[in-house]
Amino acid sequence: MSTEINTSVAVVGPGAIGTTVAAALHEVGRTPSLCGRTPRERLTLRDGDQLITVPGPVRTDPAQIDGPVDLVFLAVKATQIEAAAEWLAALSAPETVVCVLQNGIEQLEMVTPHCPRGRIVPAVVWFPAQTQSDGSVLLRGDARLSLPDTSASRVVAEALQGTRCSVDLTANFSSLAWRKLLQNAVAGLMVLTHRRSGMFGRPDIARLTLAYLRECLSVARAEGAELGYEVPQEILDKFQASPADMGTSILTDREAGRALEWDIRNGVVSRRGRAHGIPTPISDILVPLLAAASDGPG
Picture 1: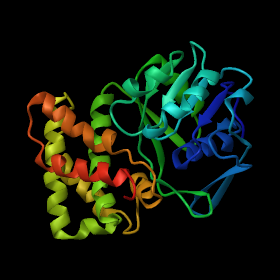
Picture 2 (picture 1 turned 120 degrees about the vertical axis):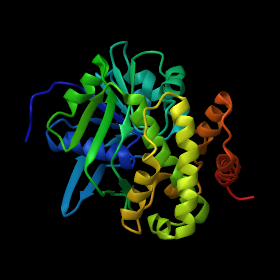
Picture 3 (picture 1 turned 135 degrees about the vertical axis):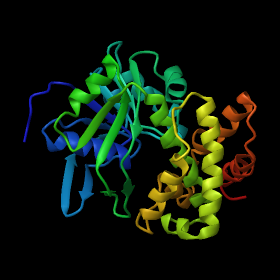
Picture 4 (picture 1 turned 90 degrees about the horizontal axis):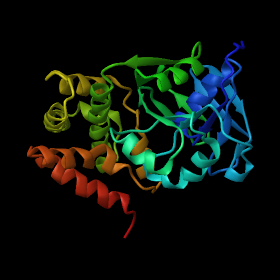
């Protein structure tokens, strides 16, 4: 199927999230340009019994770019933003929309210094996608993005219209971003235990998870997030209802010995808590341990 939406698109960082978005676009005849560190001839997304192959190549040199595009999906980790600056410079013009598919609540602050041109749109990514040992990506749920309701966001929504990746435009984006941050913060426990979602069935881990989520919620509410006191239990329930072998991107990075996004997912809670005078005793233990894990062996 092909629909006539003439938006030129590039995906920078064809990992699990980038591959999912690229496949969604390719599936409806809007194949994006692919940009990354590793040369590849194609990307592969698995969704149940369905296999979607996105033709490459994945370009590895920003000098290969002919000129700016209308829309860039920036899907690199927060630890890789500086390395992606050359791609952003090559792909962006003043009217280019750069949709940041990253974790955290500080996407604008982190990306803007490396993208002086273009209109930056933060996003909340709600779908579980995991890279497999053969290089393919397994999508384990419906693909959905939440964006602030702005004119730049509407460019993203139009580009993804009719694809398997739905887009929600919301006036209360900050609250959604904080809710996702709480979910991501708890995933740090998986890093420290080298366990997957099944561990949340343990009563002791469940109690620790709830205590940590309530600490994070206090900071989020102080930041203006409109989140109710029921949110910690809802997030725990979601982890407990997930397949026992469900992982998360920060656990994958830990297992591969890569740098971790500990600061944007966990450190931010401590930092914002201090600014509001809110004690964060659990964060104050978890964050140094995650930082040390991110340093690698030695």
